[in-house]
Length: 132
Image (tube, rainbow, N blue to C red; front, top):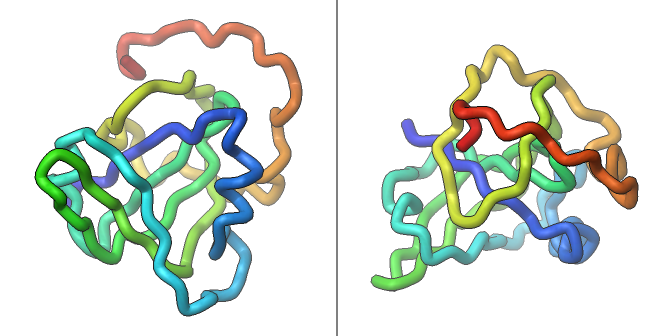
């Protein structure tokens, strides 16, 4: 199992939510993809989780249904079933992908995942070795 984490850019957050099948929405029948050039995408498999960070917080995950490998780029595919969750530690945005570094047991529901901390000027998050 390789759960991966990616950052949604702040200026793309609302468009990403509108893309489709966000946490709490019914399954639309569509498939959605996270495009990346990070080779770490090759390590994830159907059933693993793809987590999204935005505005300094973990926002949730979606189950991976497949990974399309195009040689120099990848698409991590998801369908319905996204879950809004967070952890108590802020997460600064980053480029590329990372493997999940926290325990699943530390995740908690995040009912205001779409708006918490959005549009608020974030204090600089202290860089922690475990996060980098």
